[in-house]
Image (cartoon, rainbow, N blue to C red; front, side, top):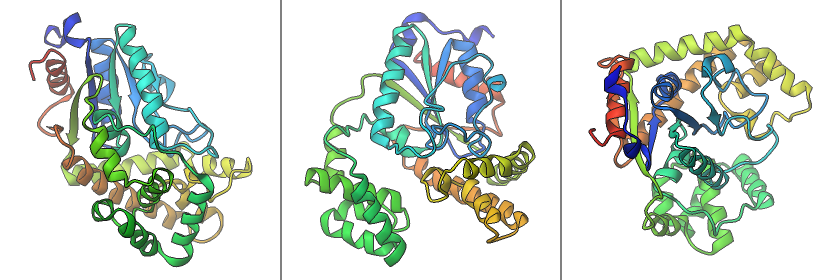
Length: 320
């Protein structure tokens, strides 16, 4: 595979980003690329950060990682708070360390906000998380509906309110938090921070999978998770004392199984709801990445894994 070799100079300042919807094959491609170019993987997945949550997050096993170091996986417990500002800070440290050791950082994941924070060098230095205020806003959303929160955002930051769907409660709350802690809209912070160029040259690629094939993969993935013991994983977390109301346990795959455990629905219904929820997640991810500036799409049905590796290594060599 001589076409996949890269020169030492070419990779010094480059960071490859592999984005795309869930079940699109990001992890396998990232590992294969890392093996070819001497890379290490930085996960950009807001669920894989949690320890003790392996099956439902589709975390690669040690065997599947094939000796490739993975960063930003298993970094907090399920009951710990963690946000995009912390991710940006921690991931920047990882990327610096990987490059300083002469390796190639490969960012892989489907959490668009995490990826954007790196690629656009979004600064969160002025913002402080206020957990009590966040809980207060979460209660408003639960008791009065997400539209009430969205109306609050419209009053202080109409630009962000226009960009954020009312049902995306997490992002609405984050925008309100930023306004409360700084007195300025989050949209202003983003515009200012984007004026500061990122430290490294990010080459961002998105994996495009035909919808029918993607949905088939999602079906198989969820069935595989159940076979691997997703029910037992969730049951174990609850038995360990973790509250079902935790942010971590509201993730797709976990909240549905919790409903089955609590007798709110059958296990069969829970599994169908996981599949449905994952399909909806994939749609949202595709929509997000279509709006990402500079992202180059790779058709997975038109390129085998070696063709995709060639595209990525050419980018490292400034040929793509």
